[in-house]
Image (cartoon, rainbow, N blue to C red; front, side, top):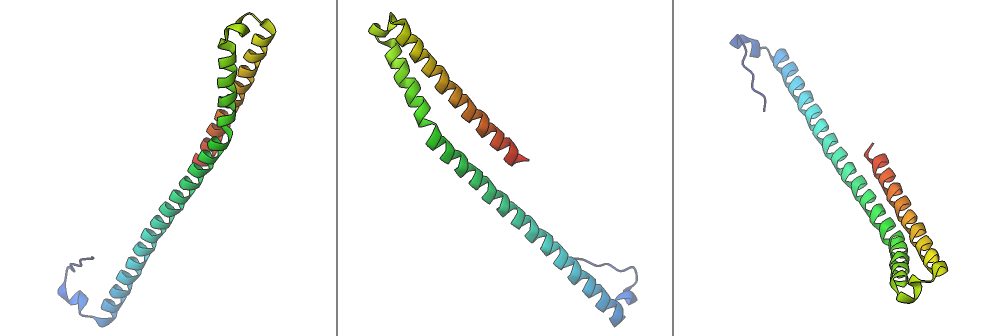
Length: 121
């Protein structure tokens, strides 16, 4: 809503001036409406992009995370068995497997962090 308070009443009696004023108000209203629509469009685009990123991260983690966790868990269980405690070769192999899968998880985590940082820019 726009309010107009002329200094002199006769300023609004000229039909040409009144018409120009009405056109100005209409154009201003259209510009404001366009800006508001642009804000809504940008917000919707941002929400779509955030959802896409979220889905990509969930998909990546759900596909890549279980295998190394399973391997680490199995290797740790084997390592804890009494018969493997004194078998240096077996123990070293299991420890190496745990290290490799831990590195794999760290690499996955670093990749996810990199993706998030790239998407935030």
